[in-house]
Amino acid sequence: MGELANCARCDKVFVKITKSICPDCVKEDEKLFQIVYDFLKKRENRRATIPEIVEATGVKEDIILQFVKDKRLRSTQFPNISFPCERCGEPIASGKICENCQNELSSDLRYQQEIEQVKQRNEQHEKERTQTYYTRSKED
Ligand SMILES: [Zn+2]
Ligand SMILES: [Zn+2]
Image (cartoon, rainbow, N blue to C red):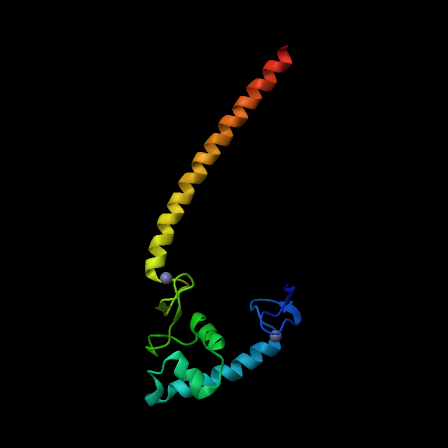
C-alpha cells in the first residue's frame, strides 16, 4: 500500500508508491524524457552537454539531471552528460558526490564515529557514577 504524499514537483497530494512525483508529473516526465532522448539519440548530438540539451530541447536542467541521476540517461552512452557533486559542485556522472568528497566524507565519518564512541563511554561512566551515588544514598 502506498502512503499519501505531496508531489515533489507540483505539490499535489497523491498516493506514493515508489516515485516522489505524482502520476501527472510522471506522464509529463515521460514526454520530456522522450524529447531529450530523441535529441541525444542523433549521432551529432551524442556528445551534447547538459546546457546544450537545455538549449536545444527547452527541457529544464534539473529535470535532465534527474534523468541522469535515475540512470535513464547514461554517461556511458552520452559522454558529456554529468551533474554537479552535491558537496563541491564538480561534474560527476554517477552517485551523489564525487570521489574526492567520498574519500573526505568517509574519513569524516570515522572521526564522527570515534567522537560518538567517546561520548558513549563518558555517558556510561556518568550513569555508573549516579547509580553508585543512588545506592549509597539509599543505604544512608
Ligand atoms: Zn505532480
Ligand atoms: Zn565533490
